[in-house]
Structures are given as structure tokens and as C-alpha cells.
Image (cartoon, rainbow, N blue to C red):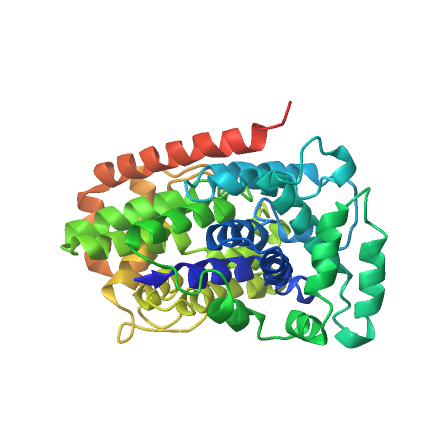
Length: 415
């Protein structure tokens, strides 16, 4: 069993790793919303619902650059990331009811034609207020030297931007210094994990897979060139591990690890991810952080240590020349070796900014060379060669389904 809050908080936190000004933005926003919900006397299910929407409210932001723009209140176009977030929430059964709150979390109260008794309206308004508060916090200034000014600014939003009742809930929730000290504390993650609404929500592998698929989409959909990559890696890893004799549960863990193997790329700017050519030394140094972040994010979730290892070590090499941990054959497990082969196979067989997908003979030539150079495990390269067409079909089928959802996501607009 895995704690659902542990997974959600870790992956939410990963979205905010890119820049110090974004650090814990969604966690802090969720904390404010949660405190307001408690003051309102909401039941446990309602608290969980609004917390889920708040802790992932910027899930539709396509890039580090877009998240920074939103955080700085730069630009007026906030609709696109709300629509993308709405579609992502609707794709997950247990998040579907909160899709509207994510969709409308930038809508001012004067534009609503609903009663605050509508949970979507209430939750969206709570997130809008909390989002403002969190973004107004100056991380370079002691919180109790600025909280009164922030409160004053929130009061000025009463009526037009924020419903008066929502403002009053915030004023009551934030009247004591403890609220503000908690908000600014670096221990926000552990505070929400141990005291938040999901602190006792333990789930099995099926739910973990749902969350993994959600973040697979968040990771991949940032670029048309990677929109189906993790789906392909998961399919290849599943097939290779099954053929090698992994148990049913181990195969499921491999698939989940495939979905999440690039979760650390959420902190890599899009201009690096989409560069149509070889990365320079500075850019490559940034890129090398993505597997480190993948490991840190996943390994922080109790019960996901094996998934973390299999997911994060896909750029390690048997001779120790990989990155960023420089593990070698003595410390790389079979699952990590399979993931490395699955990642390279998928990358070679899909279109990239700098080349088209490669044919079978070229793919196998590259894989064979990497095995010869002691970078990839020969037994799994040979397995791919023996089962190439079957693996290719499975990868293509998975990527086609992911591609359909990607096209729906980028073309979706509200009428």
C-alpha cells in the first residue's frame, strides 16, 4: 500500500522545482484552501476534493516558463492552462468532480452565474484567493513583516474578484500568527503529509497507476515531440520484463516506472527539451538534473522505492559512465537495465525535433553498439532483437492512444 497524499504531494512538488520563486507554490496554495475548508466546517470528502484541486491547480501549465509567467501575474491569458488542467482532471475518475474548480480557478466572482453553494464555484473561488495570497508572499521578507499588507490586499478583492463569504473564511483562518508561520515554513510538505486530508488514505497499485498515467500526460504533453514518449517506454518495459519472466506485480511496477521515468523533466525548461539539435554543455548540465529529480521525487514516497530506482536510473550505464549517479553493473538492478533499453528503444523509434523515427535495422545497430560498449545490458538488447516487431506494435498502439488524447488536449477550447 502507498499513501495517496504522499504521491500527490511529491508529484505536485515536482512541478514547482524549476525555480526558487515557484518552490512549494501549489503546496502552499493547497494549505490555504485546506485551512479555509476546515473553518467552513466541510466534511472529509469535501476537504479532500478541494485539496486535490488546489494542490494540482496549475497542472495544465505547459512549461517552466508558463508557470513563472503565471506566478508573476505577467500577461492576461490564463485560460489555456485552466482548460488543459480541466481536461487532465476529467481523464482521471477520482479527480473528475474537481475538474470545474481547476477550469475556473482564475474566474472572478463577478463573472460567475452560480450560487456559492455550488461546490465548483466555492472551490474555484477558494483556490483563486489562495493563489493570490501565495503569489503575494515575498520569499525574501519575513512573513510576519508582510502578512498584514497581504490581508489588506485580499480585502480589496472582496465582492468583484472574490465572494465576500470566501474572503471572510480566509480572514478567520489566517487571524493567528501560526497560520502565516506555517505558510512560510520549509516543512510544508511534511505538514500536509502528516496533518492534511490525505494523511490516512492508503491505496493499492491500481490507484498508483492512475496517478502515474496522469503525470505521464503532464510530463509528455509539454512538447509535441515527447507527447507519447512515456507511454511508449512503459509499453516497451512491460513487454521486456514480462518476456524475461518478471511476476505480474513486477511487470505492473515496471509499467508504472515507465510512466514516471521522466517526471524530473517537469523542472527542465522547454527551450532545452525542444532544442532541434545537440545540447551544449550548459544545457546538458541542466538536462542531467532530470533523472536526479525523478529519483528524489519518487523515492520520497513510502512504498515506491523500487519504482524510483527502476524509473530514475535509465541514463546509467553498465560501465559507470552514465549520469547522474554513475552506477555500474554492480549496483544496477534488472529493472533499471530493462528501463534503460526501453528508453533508448522508444527514443530511436519515435520522431524527434532533429530527426525522423529510425528503421529497425538502424535501431538494432545502435542498440547492439551500446551493448558492445558496455552501456546497455546485452541480454535485454538481444531480447528486443528477437521480439522487435511485437514490441514495436505494442509501443505504437500505446503511443497512438496517448497521441489521440494529446490532440484532444491541445485542440480543446470552451465554446
